[in-house]
Length: 100
Image 1: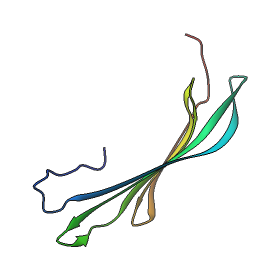
Image 2 (image 1 turned 90 degrees about the vertical axis):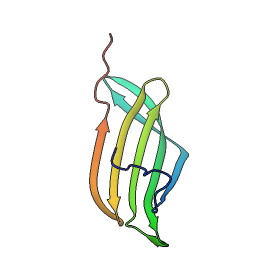
Image 3 (image 1 turned 180 degrees about the horizontal axis):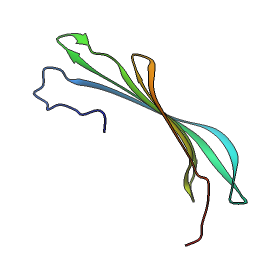
Image 4 (image 1 turned 120 degrees about the horizontal axis):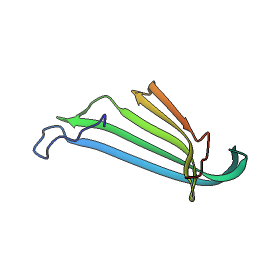
């Protein structure tokens, strides 16, 4: 976890903001010869500290996800930003379905 909340007695309380959106958009993926419909979800988390009336740098994590209720996550792109400058990007995609 790249963000840790300090104890309540801290002089710099954290500010956290979260926004989760589902647009109703759907997309069909083809995995292991199967068509899978997935819903589009986005999540945006913003973090900073407020010390003596001044804000620290702003950090943001965001994710775009395509999700199927039966299979779970089909595709995800996660971004990390500091002061609106991208510092990291990770992408995961379901590429194969196997029977147990």
